[in-house]
Length: 73
Image (cartoon, rainbow, N blue to C red; front, side):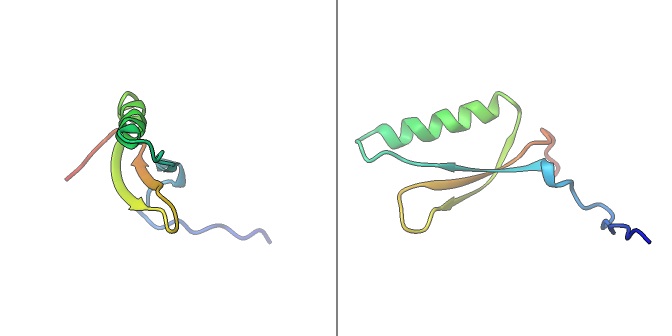
């Protein structure tokens, strides 16, 4: 008998969120340019930035995006 996967009501699909690692260069001013380019690229798709976390052990950042293009709240 095949098991059915239970899905919580109202739970978003896994594809709704996208995690991205952005490595920040050490050159002066380059980190800001790199980060702004990553933000602009996703903003053109109407994605919403929902979380930023410093990567442990290096100078990179993890950006988490809501790809639904809809913001509530």
